[in-house]
Image (cartoon, rainbow, N blue to C red; front, top):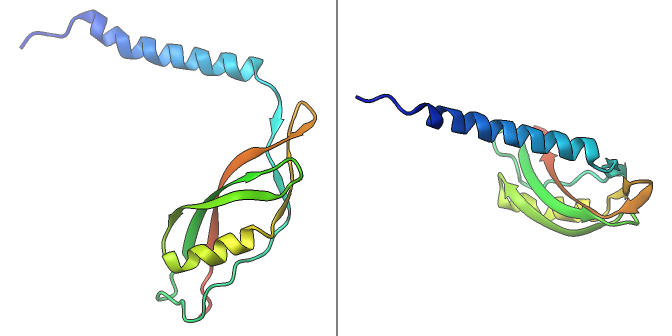
Length: 121
């Protein structure tokens, strides 16, 4: 079996170095952006009869926090139990945020967040 040419060993190292340099340059030159911060949250209510052996449910949602701190365009990204999707989205629509800040100005930002349903037995 022939050994691989030395140039093929260098390729992954070069790609990794280029990626790190790009990320470092973006971080150093990037603008200061602070993420949105929840200021009012509403706990979701699990539907009656939802008790999966004491196992909690989890709904991952994606949404935009607008410049006023309201939730817009909420959608389910992933779920453990589809019956929990609507209660999670309904609760999230009532949340309020301090909007994301970029260079001191409020900006809209897309967020992906899990919402956990604890099951009481």
